[in-house]
Length: 294
Image 1 (tube, rainbow, N blue to C red):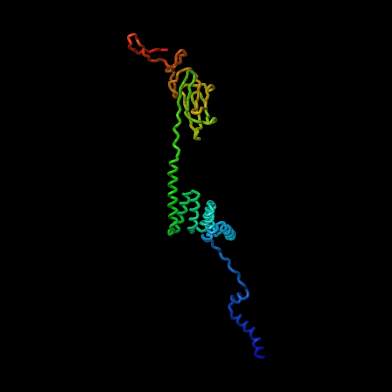
Image 2: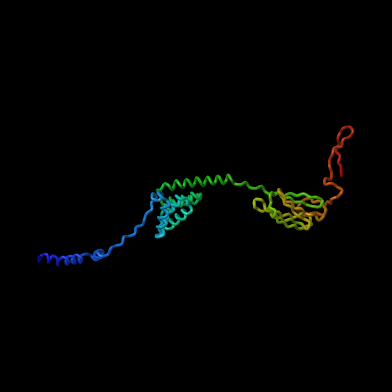
């Protein structure tokens, strides 16, 4: 009975003695329950492949709590690629390699998304950068070759579909007794596509062509014209500029400096053709050239 009482009294002392012998940090752990450390969740490709939409929701949630996680951005880019949200994939992949420039997979994601957007040059650049970071990854080489093939194909298609250059616009002129008419051979000119300035010895015009380009016409006329009686007309196949002659004389040419001594006045009793060679048959059946003046 006495022995049991002594044991009962000594037991608390022994516990206290053991507690004193523990190191300081061990004694704290006896009384304080440590909180479990938060672990970063990983999102492997296999998890994403099973249910991309569910993976997207969980990655969105993960990035809300850790917006600087390059790996999560990289994997969310993979989700977007599977869901064919290629522009979003490019954005996430670029965020990933901004946060972690040494991450080759981010460049892989960028390249694949750009490729599906038909941005083959951008894709080629991304794959090239990724391959420089990880030369052992053969997938980069395969994608680089694909991009080069598509870039070459685009170049060939572009050269084949290239619109041939439009023929140069030409102008011509003719005259009557009272007018000089300049014709510009331009088709389908808009109704408001001509801006013209008639001057006494100059014609200046800008014509909007069907291609959208402008054609400029500047002529320094041989003789004076009456600007108030000059006009233009837009036709389907051409534009005509009609200028009233100041003098009823025959112009030797359209442009230049006129020589008064060489000016030939129109005779109203004459036809435009001053002479005509004809064959005059005589009674013997032989022909002789005769010059007939009208």
